Image (cartoon, rainbow, N blue to C red; front, side, top):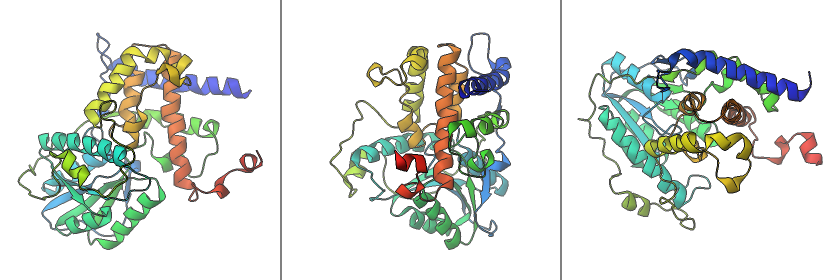
Length: 359
């Protein structure tokens, strides 16, 4: 079978599996009513140390990669552990000044998102604190009064080092939960994949297990009586002004505003108006027939799982438009996660294959 036919076969397989999962889950008006669960698949859960949960005032969720209150496996796992321990839940974010290559535009967009996340968490009775400092130092301080710590997964070298450092420094259980990949990286493959064609079949066979919408779990012990302090996200201008950051690239909130509500609105607008042109125009930036999801995915303000379900359930666009988008989201994006996870020198010339070095 030649490469073109193989690609078409795999795309058709993905389509059939997605359609089989969603066919019976749409209402008569075409609204997406996907099968959902509040169960966190065991493959998403990693114990980072050998400590046990202990007596404490709350369960602590360190939010870093997955900066949202919706469709967040790490958050829902933390809620479930808090309910099991009969404790409130505190979510914490450590805001550092010197995040690699970040500038004012990045910080403003991220903080706009965290502002919305705080509001949504508080509506669920979950406390949130934003503290200025090195993330691990912030979490370690709050962990002194915690029963246990939950964190989401980060993929880059410094993110992994943070989590390793945290697990060594605190004297309670630390659990990492995969929340930013549709299929957990190490479940998809145990090695670096070199092309979309090698990872595509591995992702395809996991869709039935992982492409399931995530329900929220109600928090049984309201946490809003906790007073963790921290920066005031009601004063975004003041928070941004107080940071020692690169100001050479200003915010563009008039065009791209951060937050889960903005992300979902942008996705809906794309599905309603531009998805129908995606297959033909996706590589033509002048048409703007793209989703603009990359910034929201980068900051964890929208779940790739949610995006995939919305695209698959869309009534607009052709099957080819939907398949083309899902190829980018489910195969190409997760190939990049595989790359940085298994290639420790992902940012060095030495990691390039011989053919790339020669050309």
